[in-house]
View 1: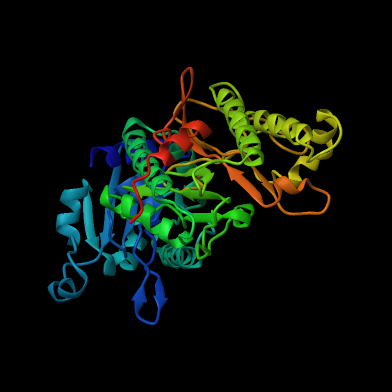
View 2: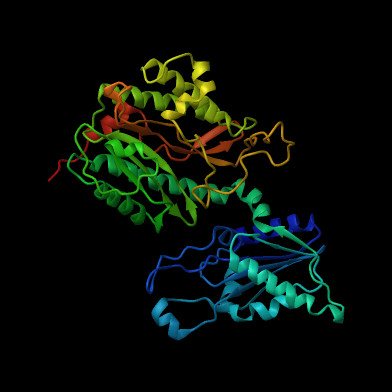
Length: 447
């Protein structure tokens, strides 16, 4: 409760700098999967960040002036009949006490109350253009306020994007968040270890996915942070492979990109290992190349450097390795300038990580003037969390060495920027090829 209250207070300070007003933030709606079956419910990340309130049909209103701020939570009423079918509901009275709100009301009162709340306020803060329903609600409330103009009531004369303010807050993680993310990273690392020790030729990709999910759930995660990628052989060259139905073959590599969500925070790990437990020579050559590129990127992840520096460091190592093993021809500078390396490495090395697996926050420096067509990349600061995930993907082609055909490799860890560098949250699963082979040699006998 104190964590979320402090975040609301920080948001209020941001609003005061813009003259104060009213912030309105709705949680995510429930979504039908098919007919009358729902997808498992997950709160909107911004709403959870400010409230911790887990139920659907809820709206947070924060009223801020020069002296104080007042929080109002609109939520579902207690309903004993619906609780028989759907489970416990807090209701306004319990919600106010449990989540530290100044006031809580029935969600059915939202429209009638907002005309009063917004009256004579200088500005409204809400997620501009995020959902048609919330934009329409804001227009409806503003129209109700404007209808009182002859009574001397004024409507807000400015609108600010609430997500823009919260993005900057969420970009820097506090100790509470980092503790959760470390635990999520540890659970996910254990799941990847389980996959390595379970994997054998003849198994299906979905069987390995089931082992991951089992490890997530038994340690307290309620879901994956994203759809798990379990890609054997040539499927590893499909960046967002989702089918997870193929049979794993002796001699192939298996790429697993999977992480759990814990208490609203994501983890994101990728490991690539041999189905048989032993890398072939060409597989080991490309694996060691990707690992060296990741090491270079990790070294470039430190305060004062730019967001793009880890990517540039990884790309230089990968491009030189592509030349050395015969995938590309020419000089390193020529390959980098032409971008020919993108045939085998087509994605970026990092993205922000937090409540969302591709977390919020600008990648360009918001406070700096653009130099040419684009602003400079963001300066890394302690408390930022990002992935470091270089890879190489060699689809079969007549102009490429046959030994490298259909090899896809990615290595990904989660890094928090510290005052003197970065700390990896996900290294409880092996990353060195020899250590991976050693772990797989210790697999229990298959009955």
